Image 1 (cartoon, one colour):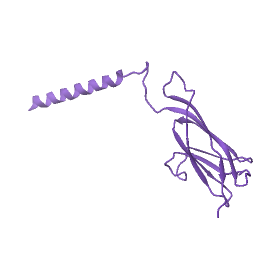
Image 2 (image 1 turned 60 degrees about the vertical axis):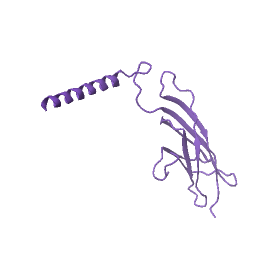
Image 3 (image 1 turned 180 degrees about the vertical axis):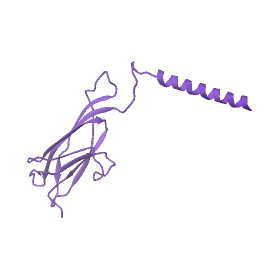
Image 4 (image 1 turned 60 degrees about the horizontal axis):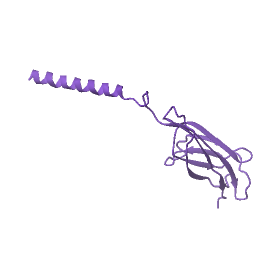
Length: 145
């Protein structure tokens, strides 16, 4: 019985050693590839009302499409006096993001849309750098009834 236990322990240790060796020996283009692809995304636009007047001080949030923007946002900003905004962030690359506009004016309705991102100009030496994505999202906010 003791010999069988020693044999099982020896086989287990051998398997662990082989797996460890395989893990350390995996290489892609001369380096280890761990992590998540990164990039820079930039979303800009303008917010107007139905009369095409700029909406100042509206909050613009960027979040994931399936996430409630009141609970989580990747980034947010406010519109300037011309109703313009710019949100940019470097980090994890996303194929699509939700942009939410929440006006300070209580007579206007909030609005949101999902935008698809296309990255370009990534670092050719770094397979994990997707580059930069640009999107323009304009909002025309409606009056509350």
